[in-house]
Length: 128
Image (cartoon, rainbow, N blue to C red; front, side, top):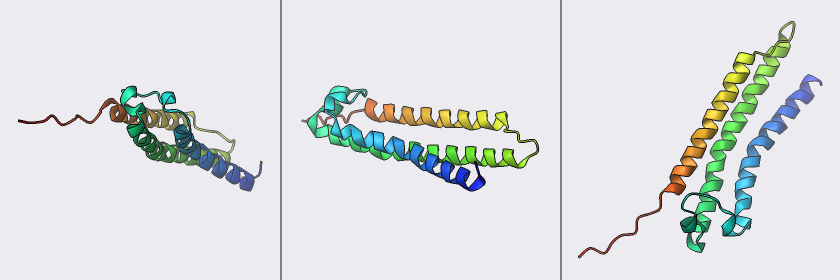
């Protein structure tokens, strides 16, 4: 694969991989609310809150998509650096480090999702 076609592939892969998360979370709104599997499902599946849940998932997917784009760009950089050395050698330390950081970022994203859906607004009690 030539250098130019490699760069085009990695650019398309990075953009496509990151866009995948936004597309998946946008499509959720097209399914019935019973398909939403989150904590406090009864609350978030109700018609008045389902749109809010879908909007939050879609908006938060941009964070994960950005993380995926950074990961793909960093992996591309590692491949370019590896191909410039003689003999070509891809640093396994940096590959594992990047993958670990991506996994940690993904877990932080999941924790944020769970925290959001784990809380429901407390209804105001009528004070006397």
